[in-house]
Length: 408
Ligand SMILES: Nc1ncnc2c1ncn2[C@@H]1O[C@H](COP(=O)(O)OP(=O)(O)O)[C@@H](O)[C@H]1O
Ligand SMILES: [Mg+2]
Image: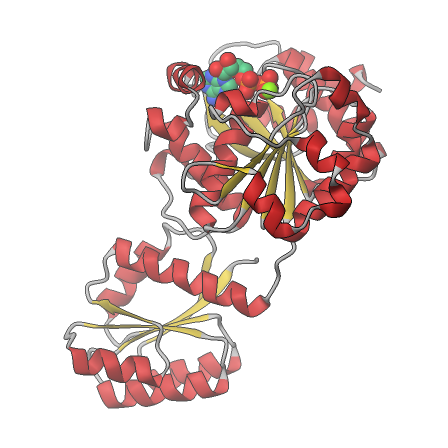
């Protein structure tokens, strides 16, 4: 879903400014107009058809309520949020009956605003009525780069943030370790699903897949042995993923580190590929090979989302250098956090259980939000890529620039 447009109607300059400052901390909200006059705001709400109208009723209750009624009547899909300095049951009831969805007390608190925006987003999405799932594959042609770490933590974050059904698929058919990372012991795996494809329906699959704790996260494990893995064909992969697309809102795939036909089939039908790299020459060179292949396969540029893993702020090679060398924007960077990640893996738990709200945990949350267009409060440390740091000393940057020549 694209960004949500909002119009603010509030006669008080200070509270309007405060609201805008709060809104800056959220993904996906664009304020397209602000009005101190209710009638002008109403005209814009009808003309511009914003998805959200925020209207303050502190000054003129009657005109405000009438305006809410009219906007509801003329722009049925608009979510109206209301605020007032004086809140009483009578006023809240009146506003809700007129069509408002949420009532916030002035001054607006960030937590209340966050809840209201999340609800607005769910309402607006329901209006769109789309249920077809998105496949997000986590890929690198190198092992040990963080694919499973990212797939497992990201899948859980997406389930928590969106509260929608998410399936984490282990397509590392021979060497899968998703079950170890999350310490689950599923009784069903992908080879079972493949062999019973024609007889499996939604309720059967949901009851048989391992559900992670009380979350909306379901896990489809790798086969228990190599022979079963080999029996799975690329057509089977297509069938399973297509079936999952109809049942889950998000399918996160942990892939193997090779360009075999099964992995390529999966990448082909993915909506997004998170191409994982670290900031070192061999890793960037490998990414270049992947990018070349994706180009030959005519994948759209924005299907490929470059994610830099294990990033340190004092890296010799900067994000700008990586972007220059690969000719592709870095979509996200995940900080290096050895102890949190290692301890999470050893305990078989997500990073959020070991280091909640740490920089790396926030980074997973915000990556999940960016991929799913979720409304969340952004943390200072992980706001969009800081491109300002420079090389600390004279690194052999030419070797990076020449990468493109290397692989042609
Ligand atoms: N952001 C990170 N910070 C620190 N260590 C990490 C990070 N991501 C992954 N690792 C470490 O890298 C190793 C490989 O990760 P893994 O997810 O198994 O990679 P892959 O699935 O690509 O083989 C693990 O031991 C893990 O501890
Ligand atoms: Mg792995």
